[in-house]
Length: 249
Image (cartoon, rainbow, N blue to C red; front, side, top):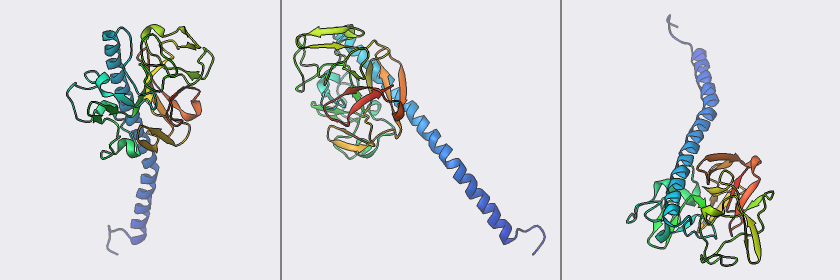
């Protein structure tokens, strides 16, 4: 061997050390990448909440018209001009979670997040729980189509109801045949990641893995965002589909 050259054993040792370092660093890089996606997801939700507040100021405190079957299918004629430009037919980036999996994030899927489907549907990676309902309504309320509750919400219950109108926040709403408590602004979720306690989520036309493997993001009616891990889930808002809920601590 000439002086200054590595032996085969030395080269193998260097290679082994490099491989070991890569194995140690990859999980950290993966976590950093997911953390960045969580931040981007929260930013999407903040933008959605801002536009929903604009909507409510122009419609006397009411939220938009949402399909209560899943919550991630919005009636296009209700949200256009607010969540996206009125005449836009392009996919809406703020409705696409950067961690969206499967059909939800598939650019060729007709039910993909962000798709504006003519004047009928707009699909999203996020469920909205602020607004008025549709054909799944339990009963009419004050001149809007419906309020799907799927149970009774009280200050102490895990189940919470959607908020139709800003003036209902932090109050007990008494109407014929039902009494429902709507949480205070800091505790009432406005919108968030489609979530479930399983690894699979479902929505209008989709069944796919959760966007975030171990939790979800939400934006609340006071405008703040928060993340919750699956082992922290307690409160929830239910939609018709069993694997389509909003969960928080």
